[in-house]
Length: 341
Ligand SMILES: *Cc1c(COP(=O)(O)O)cnc(C)c1O
View (cartoon, rainbow, N blue to C red):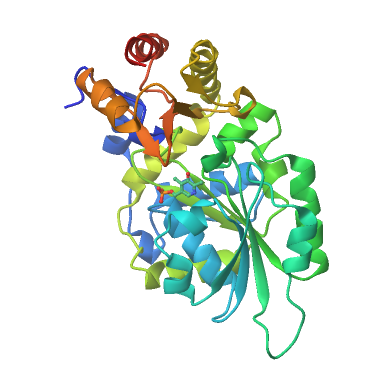
């Protein structure tokens, strides 16, 4: 169906590899709600080893992982601190209010980084009039800032602050493997600073479906129950877990190619005066840019006519780089953009 189309909308469009399809055919499966799917159990063990957290839970989506984490870490009426342009605040359909009856204290960040004093000042005192601050969430890489990496020193200072105030921390690490490959800092070094972390197998890591939530044993035991409440208990999930195992063992190192594609694209784009973006935000596999010569509507009309897909984001255009666009495709996209802007 995708014949001839170059799809830069998201790394979620990546198709499973041939090896993944074969692994699905050959997977040993059981009933995961009953706890006896061996391939799911193997994937969860592997995820726990890689992240350094004692326990892991395989889920259908990243959104479900974030929502379950919020539910487990909070009680109704609590307040959670999130960055203003975070996925949890912007793109989870108000789920924190809906699923967990918590309110969000959003703080404007700078490329995903919320000033530490502002976090500190936002933490509520123990007072019968006030909501309880029970959770701080960060996002790494920070999607809406262009896939930028959140510095580890900053993460450590947020983690220390939270610990000193007895507040839980959760990392939306949908693309934590991109952050790790680009920064050289291991996923476990990022993850150890949080009580829980979610990451996606279904983005750059190329699984068709699936995300993972990690934390300590008590947290994951509760998370497993909340997943059931959310209707997320699944049966022969081992067919999907088989892909997830390949994502974690074979698809991580190649993310650096996606970053090189983004870099190539950014370097070429930076030569066009009709286009603006800040090159220092191009750190992993995406880029957001503005065009000043034609309207966004015209831009999308013209690229679509030429079989190129991307996404709009307010007054910006987003291109995401992944295994199913080649370096040649990137060159082709640049030629098309040069033609139309
Ligand atoms: C994609 C994404 C999610 C959610 O993942 P889904 O599997 O699409 O629900 C969460 N956070 C961030 C930063 C994301 O980019």
